[in-house]
Length: 157
Image (tube, rainbow, N blue to C red; front, side, top):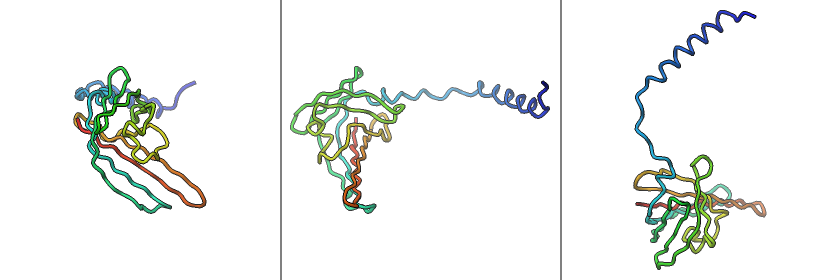
């Protein structure tokens, strides 16, 4: 079976364009998200936003002290302002866009100031060499009302 002439032309154009893709300059190597997370981070502040039936009824940022250390072996250690430590594990999920942190008691680790979080998986926002934001969203619906809660922890190296 012979292919129509436009199919051959399309294949030739595709091969021609593909030949140029190998001639690009290499981009600077970007560290993997895991490498960006590893190390000791200072908890700087957290932002809490609560929405009731689609209207923001609370939006505040509070300073917070303490540290979080992500270790290469998958361990995480959180130390609060008073020096209380909580150990757990961490791993990247969703292709490195989120980090799952498991503490035996997430509230005592400083990650749930109001005990309202539905889980311990945080979206990674703006990870770079010196700053990181971990965000978690929850929602509840009951008796015709909808409450959405988002907390974002801002960390600095």
